[in-house]
Length: 257
Image 1: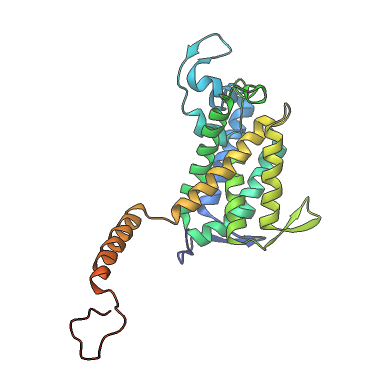
Image 2: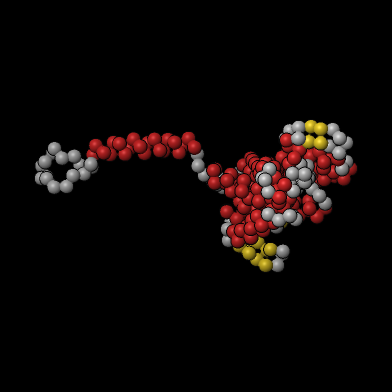
């Protein structure tokens, strides 16, 4: 798991969870800029939102057909469906991302944010391919929003600060670990329903990718192989120095450890 970083990368502006770093400013700025572009050119939402069916075979509203619009699994996370959608997502990005970036460092924070966002998009596409009625509704949906990456940040926050209180609906203080468990359960159950499953499947994907990413970061595959190899060699050598009971103190023929 990623440890604390001693390299600050923040501006002097600070309140709430802490300074707004350069990375957060860039992410928020890009999301706001793309939201403005969506208002000016609505076709942007169609071209860059995530249409699971279009990843394999795409048909635009003007009748043109294209295949493998793979960029949508990344671009969808910078689009939003309304003013409240983007405000709450950017607020969550600041609230949970500021402290995580200070702890991880900017480079790791951006890597985690992009991996969880893109990974959530990929899992949404895979989920839509399941031969189930509630999954097929995703195929022709237009999924937009940074919520996949935001849920990944929320999971990371709960792992590092499990007992930090989070005010659910700004009223009830709930420990972060319980808050994430509740949100994950809601996302899972909602993804199985006919209504609301579009966004919640992506939320659940963000949680899963975030968990796998943080868990795999604890293990260095090369170091693990070396450890297993040396452990095997040590066990072989130890067999030559087994301890034998009995005998005399001057019995030098005995092998001892």
